[in-house]
Image (cartoon, rainbow, N blue to C red):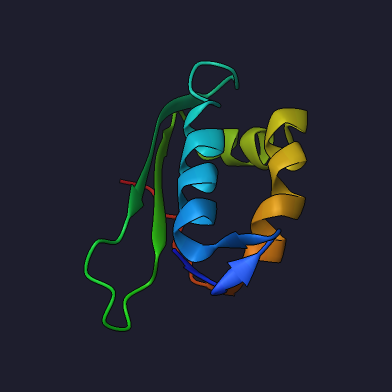
Length: 93
């Protein structure tokens, strides 16, 4: 989950949230082991986090493949600049 800065990259929070959603969901089908990727944008505000990423990987080791894949790495500078806080949980079902 990410809390976004009010402004980054010359865009407001809503624009950056949409851009993050579109860029991450564009990874679908392009990284081995990434079975599902979904990005949600909060619609309430009120202190909530702004964007959440949910992904399913074929196995635990696929997380490393995903995180280090050049397509994923290319998105990180934009996301990091737009984010003010991050929380994550990686788990096996």
